[in-house]
Length: 325
Image (tube, rainbow, N blue to C red; front, top):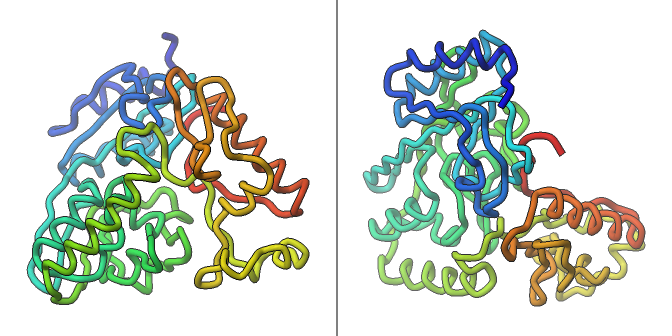
């Protein structure tokens, strides 16, 4: 493979960083829930925050393209892969000191939910079975069943490209499926603190298990998908004609599920090559086997076009794209 000059230069620089694992031509499909994506020129990972920060500084100093990859649950990687350095921060420590909890960004969100439930701490049990890492959950303000992680975040420690900083909940500027980190993509979450409240452990476990069962029926853990592809919509932000069509039963806490509109434009059961939309959930796109990123992007674009043509507004993806499309 022909590599950009910057990568030929940066590879030995990254190789000198202690506690940083560095590999060439790693297939990114192995690190994504979709099971799709070509190779990264360089793939570096570490559980050491200092090594991670140094790797980012090195990439920036040499103007080498890089991407921070979490658990790969909410990303679509180009079939051509990524021409640059893919970095992963893999620290997974979780510490419960009631009512406070500290978690590394690399910990699976499911592990954090289970740790808090087992500790009899209430506040994030409704996030059970949401795939991805804690860092990604903070980045995208993950939520379900009327609650989101922003309600419990006290502080977030992150690397801003030059130094490690810490901000409080207000500083995170949380919004629906967003945060200040989504607006400053060079800021990399390392660790966070949550404030929960003591509750009955058995009651919390029952609630988390109920949600797990529901989510597993919709999004089986073995299904190669990212959960819902499109964000839900605030009804107040919809064009008047579109909002008037929405039945009251489809509105929850001021939001309408994108699946409602996708259903109206015939999304269920659509296919594009090895990519398909579930016949029971219009916002669930998955890889049946052998699907490509090009097919996935094509199907997503077709759905967006149908919504625009019929309703006059654009649905927005929750997923992030990596590489060229």
